Amino acid sequence: MQRLTLMLLLIPALASAQERGEVAFNKACAQCHQARTPTEKPRSMLGIRPPVGPYMDQVLRKKSLAEVRTWVESPHRLNPKTDCDTRLLRPDELDALTSYLATVVVEPPQETRRMRLRRQMEEQAAALQKADVEAKANSQPKNQGKK
Image (cartoon, rainbow, N blue to C red; front, side):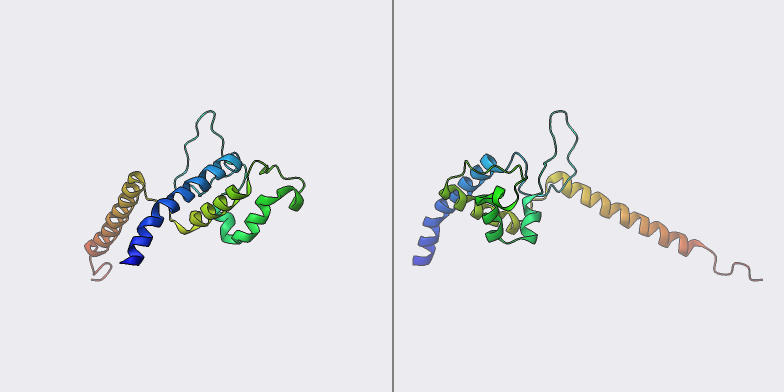
């Protein structure tokens, strides 16, 4: 019972840390990066440009959090030609950002209603196509060419 009470008390603090990390990401990284790879192809709209930098979930599949944190602390020391500017982040925001990025890879993206409907339609179309192929195979006479 004590563990449950402790966990219930920690939930608001964890949610707050998640929000602070997302704010830090938006402050320092979102100009060039997106946290997750989009699951749907974005529609081209005027005034909206794709991210310049890589998606952070893809970066974290190749690099550790420590390596990403080292990059965020001093990107120009690692690559003098980079356009990353993380000077506005305070040390406590850096901790929150690192925690937020850790959750980016762990959490799978939520399937939207549109994505679910598209997947269901594709499954139904594949099933109908398979049924058509089987029906054609069964409807052909067995004794073709034999007398």
